[in-house]
Image (cartoon, rainbow, N blue to C red):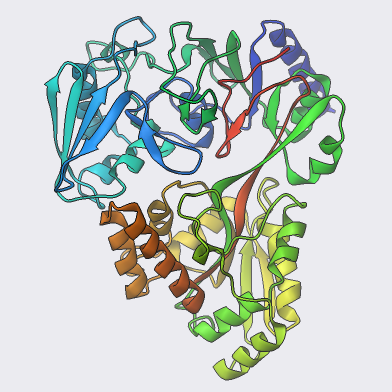
Length: 513
């Protein structure tokens, strides 16, 4: 009864807010921090990307294009990047963007005291080492690296990095404390009532980067078409459902089991879009049973993957056995290859490996917005048909993550959030397990290919690297990629535009009646 009263109270509050002509977006949790790239999560990234912009941004297909910069050039040796700034950008306080602002921001990000999430990506701890940031003139900045990197610009554009957003120095007080983000985005910071909502206002002075009139990832057309947006904290799924149905909420992520209910609704619309995240089975290649590639390949060939994906995703997903997302510029004919569904061949591989019914455990969680558990259940049934002794262990998500990080598992059914450059996705799985037990694949050839993908800047040569990687992965089968993650959202019937991108609510170029 208490839960129903709380839900009813929330809906009344939402209905009152909606009169302000804001877009009302439900989020499962509160903003963690409004400091760019510090103490963030997915919900935080969603809010902040409406306020912040970086020098570059991702497109829909994973390419990186100028955003606050009007152009980016690279020196012949691949070490120095020159950013020519747009002359039509002003901060939310009216100040014009200059090279000095970029220099201030980069120095602040690189200062360990800022606690920037992505500092290890730029200080040489991982792959990229940013050695110098220099002002050329008021509208030009150069950045120099210790070694060439194909992922430098992609790292700058990452949501996890706060988009390396350029904010006004006036966002920070004289004593160094953070006041509020004064960015350049289509919406500007207004209010944060912790535990309840974050409110952003339309930036009337906003000018989109050059575009063809359509949104395109973080670039493209980006005008705010409403007065504001309110990101409401609504963790209860039943309240979300009722809010969309009543019109008190304009946009919310929903669980896949609600697809049939919203598909034919007159009061709401269903939004289904793939993103670059991955649904997969990790396989522990150092496990006594799974250390043999024949066993891992047999597990893959036991799966009728299109059938599994259709069932696990409620018909919204499409099989993809590659680490490269199907909407990526690097999704080639080679990336489309999978091991065939062949139960008899799977049985032969198990016999060849000397498999004798040893137990194989799949760890799953029951979070409603991911297919971890249903995918595991379906895979278990299919694998048992070829003689694999598969059991399922259900854990809460935090414990499951800890098991993966420690390497204490045989198989884990998990979803991994988007990483738009394939090399960044590869790096989440590939590397030395002795140094990082959370990694999935430590084949020296795979590690060498990852290193090459990080350094090679030519797109055609990178394509060849990713294709070789896919071929090797199908031979070694360190993990089984099922399908790209699917965003399933519901919106009020009158909402117009493209309000979801890479798992985020994206409400520029979105309107209400």
